Image (cartoon, rainbow over all chains, first blue to last red; front, side, top):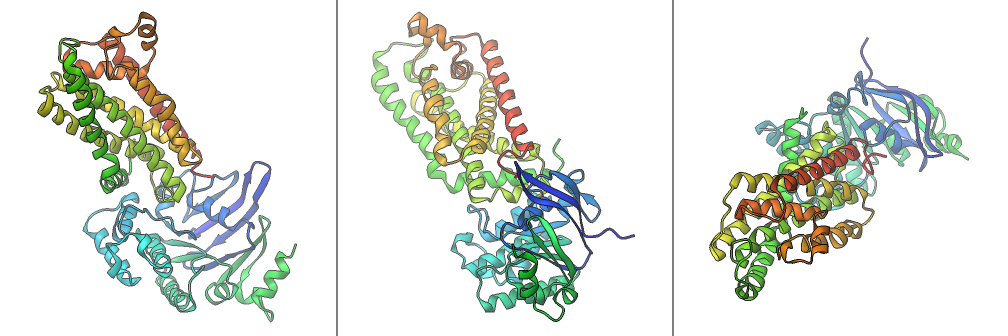
Length: 239
Length: 255
């Protein structure tokens, strides 16, 4: 049987007395476009951080394509790329080098990497800014660079934390189109967003997290039903 | 030990790019400061001193100044690089990649050693040009620089992780490194100090670093070379182990 792209098994994450994630379990199948929704402080980012190795797991387990993220962390990390909400680029490198050095950290080097970086810059319409540092880019360009960096090592799973936060409608539609294209090409995508219409538009399946627990986990159509995702979300996350 | 050699190499290279993109902050200040020390203390005031440890005062000064700049620059660069990475979250680029704690720490350390050797080489050249002194024992010269650079790069990582604001990383420099370097024999032989101060100097780690390094120039020193090298080696091992442990545990790196 094929391993899921992501398996989260009874994940618990505590910070002192505070339980940020309280025993959640879910799988994401390879090739799926999966939405992870929830109000602020629900545990979405903590879950993502545990998946990519930025948060230590209190108990439970996470595996990526069958690789345990703690025991087989090197193999697991090679399979995943993350586009965080905030811009955390290296300010000493131009944006082409941001991509090339990121590939280097993943153990990749040589002319293939330079070619890949140029391809991604072209694909995300950043070629004209290749020699600039990221602080010179517009908000939309920084957002596109975040995606390009996450893709530089050809991850099988792409995690997007609020990829369209603060971007205008035009760019949002452009990013949606790019994400659909990536997913169509076989990349599994996990999306967290506060734009519910975005999740409804893009995701095959949605998990709604509230107070560290999964409040709903269904395919998008079944979850929304005759209602709207906003109504369902508010109903499930009302405190 | 190093599995992801490409990733490790990329980090070393990235640190060098950082160094040369802030060259006016990292490379030129130690060179210019050294020149000023040599001219003001070494050549102007030093002309009134006959010899120290068998060489002119200016010649005596050069190895101490090299060691002072190596200590200062390796600590300040690694601590600010790590702290800035944490502050801007750009260090997450390393943390999500398949890089181990050993690879990350050694990446910073190797870059610190290269930076130290480069700065030392520039100041050594100044010493040759202006006061006509060069190391007599190049192996000891390199060994001491490498050990001290590892020690202070590792300490920089430790304090870069501990710090909550930029001000915190200056604590070690202001209250420990600078005072201990100044009383550790950069400007004068401890033989000229009162007996009590001389005895206290024996427990000053900088005294041993400067002393061991000066041996590579003059072949003499205020403490036995073996003792000084042992002190430096033990401190280096301890600092490196601390930096590795903190990074492996994800101290202030992983939540």
